[in-house]
Length: 193
Image (tube, rainbow, N blue to C red):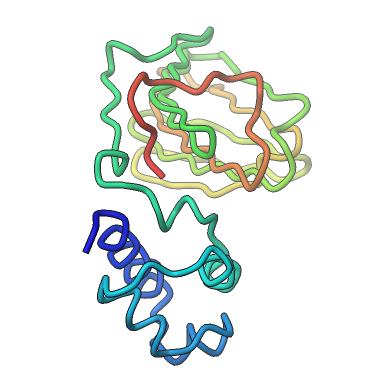
């Protein structure tokens, strides 16, 4: 069988396993027969576009997630290629759906995002050293070394370091739909799916 059939087989099995769905469960949710799904996962058939569309709707993934070829499965971003921003921020990787930022926030400094990111965007902040105060409307969170905060980033939010020591932390941004056009997509190779 060709590379596309093998790629579909691996990616469909992985998407189904990620949800802990049986073949029967995916068949029920997608309207695609259990036998057809088994044939696809065994790389014994090339399904129609309509069949792929039904599977992707049920799995809530884009068709591209099923057809991404092995050379496109990853992208190594070198620290030397990071995009530097004020306040000690560095955009390490941005693939259009996710961003990874490294922040070194000086004592007394703050980063304010007055408008927030596009609707549905989430951020995950992980403290490496020091501590940072995160404010989202009336909510205030103190994030120290080893702590991780999940937050809604589609509204105004502020990272503040009111302490005497610098804070070092990582932020992963996950876009639900539209990418924030204020930040570039980085890297010259294929982006991770």
